[in-house]
Length: 271
Image 1 (cartoon, one colour):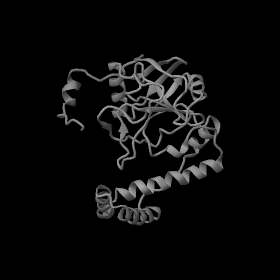
Image 2 (cartoon, helix red, strand yellow):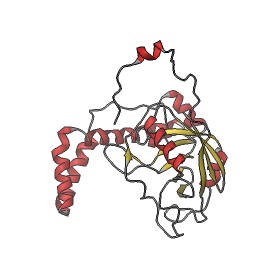
Image 3 (cartoon, one colour):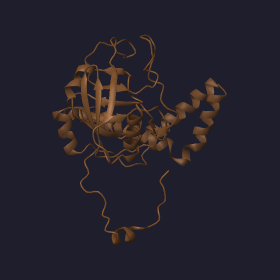
Image 4 (cartoon, helix red, strand yellow):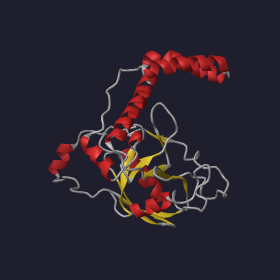
């Protein structure tokens, strides 16, 4: 929750306080058994930035795994059970017991090297406390980008439709039917809700900007995730390490057959 501050700017001015100038963005050194990646955190997503810094300083990520790796898509880590998981454990559902409010910024998008927060399926698009992913993605063309723009708007229609107060009675009824394990009623209400959401129009349609299109067409990325997950930084050095990790052999759960482990994370710069 944002803190309320008393307006004291005139006092600071009298004292000659002007605040820090030209601070460099926070950088994180992420050392893996495949090499080192340097991450740069965005100041446009302060909740995610500060949470990530807190976890890095606490050593939370040290010895965790990149537990989900999909070539041409992304590499994901941060499951807190990964430190001691055996080779057959299913990972991806554990984090710390809180979420981070979504900070979806139009200028931060899923280009190759983007650092973003994983999350469960929730109406608020709130992020996992610990799990993150780094985009590898694929080079796009205009046809693919147009298709992905459509996917983004379908997702936005569902998001805004589900959060429309007019649909709350239906969603509450659906949740009650699920709790009651009334399969037939759940199916009927789901069909009704999906029909409403498929035709929902009360939101601003999203367009991939020309500048972002050029990036997607040059270095690649995963544009269909835009506007749905919080991007809070990017790789400033070590994309070749991301590519190496993305190329490893995985099992049917997308977990690397040979462990890809985060050996350590540390701050290189501070706010």
